[in-house]
Length: 98
Image 1: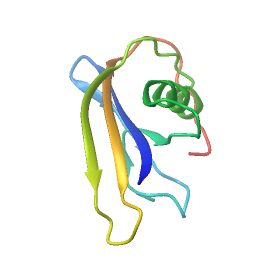
Image 2: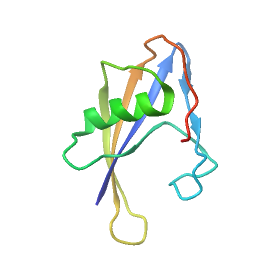
Image 3: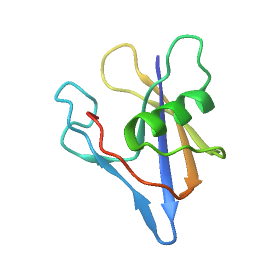
């Protein structure tokens, strides 16, 4: 399985989404939460925080794990997805290559 994280950042009644720009990435051209691959030796919470910083410039200290989902994609390996949510911490959002 390929381990990944997905984070939904909430501010009042809104959720921060990004539009995937990398053509070879899962979800290219679609809106999605923040996230990506968990790197070797990294645990899911660390990965989620790193991805948030890389993709938005935000520093998150608190994450709530809300689901762990296995996604069958028709070929091996499937995806093991750790889904988190958190409140918007304030700060300036930045754009990224993601």
